[in-house]
Image 1: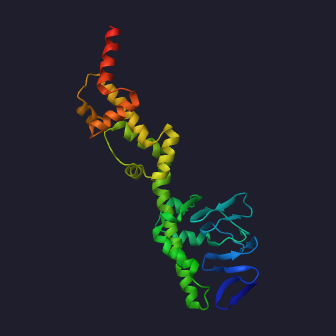
Image 2: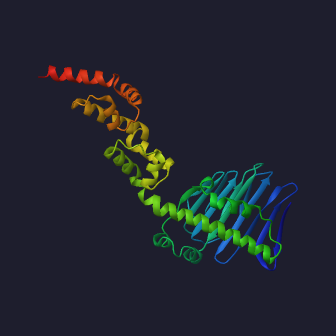
Image 3: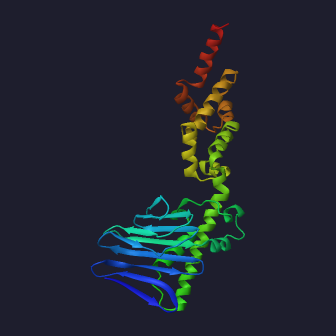
Length: 307
């Protein structure tokens, strides 16, 4: 049975999934400039929940468990949110609907901010973001350790029975918003403007200093992005991984040095970034099919043939 309750002190709505409907609840709240809705439970049959109509600037949708698909009226986009995921969507919204799958546990939080609340929250942050830079993006809960505890508290807090419990819920809501927006702004200001050039920057770093043994994590930090994104973009740019590209460049440089007369294998290995000569020889043989000395000898014979 689905039950609704009201409290004269609290602007809220509660629907409990009980009996033949399922178990758990859906509730919603309105604070100053911010509204919150939570779903936590399981229904026996697929059902659509129509949330209160909102006209907002920002929607932070967090799915902790399950897979939720929801559409936004007056927008053609349909957003699909999987488990352990946060979507930040900017724009104006109305008639929000969430479809709950049958016999599947779902835990989700939706937070809607109006323009004034967003401006106030963004004071002191990136002015471009406060000027409504698009925030359509996805953040992984796994990458947000500082907010995860507040998320769990927010979804697990019982429906407030008095003003004090309502204020506590509001406090957790603000804590989550602050953490999520702070992390999003950090990603936008540091990583996003550089994303188009992150792979190019790393490629240039490798080309200009092939002796360097910087890790992928260090390269990602230097280029202002994360490891996962960098590896994906670098592969798209060059057709190979960062490790393979660096090896290829090193081997080409080693061949060039051998062609210029450098024959000391230990010095050659060091010159192209290898501390272990045997490892260098194995890599060189894998790329060329011969030992460095054999390569030097063959190149020498080729030069004599053309004289």
